[in-house]
Image (cartoon, rainbow, N blue to C red; front, top):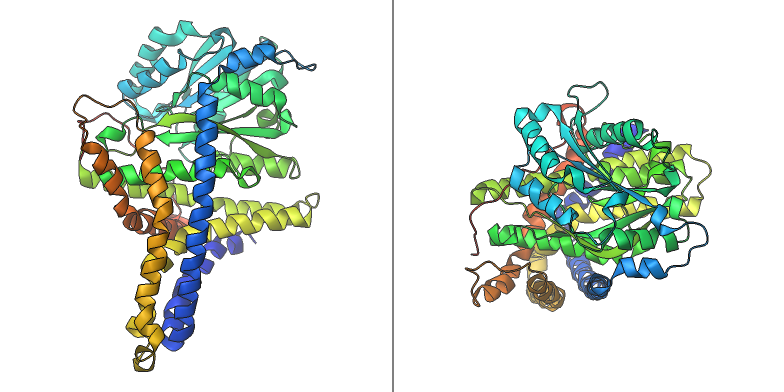
Length: 499
């Protein structure tokens, strides 16, 4: 059954695209009607999601302005005092430069939360070599005495039943900190929250106070993950326009998801209770998408009794930037393909549903539909909207060419897509508002460039959305040597590129 579930997403996506060609050729009238209806659906969905985006943005700004440590001091929780909560922070590191790692630790020591409740782990990789060891030593010398406990772990290379990547590194480091710190000090597992951040992540000052508040006030704290909003803005002024649009698009998607908590799963940086993490044996060591897989591990282990609490609070990360334009484009594609390889969770989840008899059919159907629909939309929607609108006119034949619908189809689709630019305009305005402090060479006319760059969005949705998503699904379906391993996004600091 696993192979069937692995093949299913790609089959659905390719069948959809092939049917569009076939119907446009053999039944052009109905293909044109479908495209008009689909574009209308896209317009309504864009407007709907833009409302979620504005709501989430407002919530995020409100949370940024609050002193959450003060809110904690006013909190009356009869079960546990917030001062008994410890935070375990795991920062997996491969070959990132010292400057990037240092910036993240500088943000960490500025948090508005007692450092004596912080256990920080810099999780390095043996395969990264001596340069990684030297950076870890330097970071430990500068920041090691700033927290309750600081630990550098080195994940051995070539361990059996693992693929090199974040999941295997995080699992190794979590087990090490349990053996070396948590168990010897007899810390209560239920009072420890684990936060996993990419090593380029810069944490806002109120993150851990807000996280603690959310943990103590949510319905089922030991059955909940906590998800911040990733802002890919650390080095946004170094990124070319295409990279900026891709980065902000990812930010806005995850921001909108915060307003739909019933569909929310974990992504990249997130937090969860240590007790639950230890019970399931940590992250799977043989997957690419460990950040989303951990949600499904917990969901299946606890028979569907697991949810994600939106934090409406940002953590800032690096946009994908390389020394040259074309290298940046290649890296963006590879990163999007790796994210698209989250489709590997489809067979894991569907097979888990098949085996687990304690989860209701309604819950299984809801999540199975959402995960399949999500990956299907990722691989097909942009192509249908922007590439297939003219297809009935091009291959529909002479009989269709003579119809009024054939004449009006391009105008109708263009008009609908123009209306949908209202949502894009909202994104453009928010992208300017979310810009970090400007460099000295940022001029007033650069604001216009940062607004105009959004005309590139149709291009990015296809080249850096649908195509890598379709490739990821196809690789999973083909299996064997076509399956993806974990690709580490290169990080660095380069000359400003404001154009």
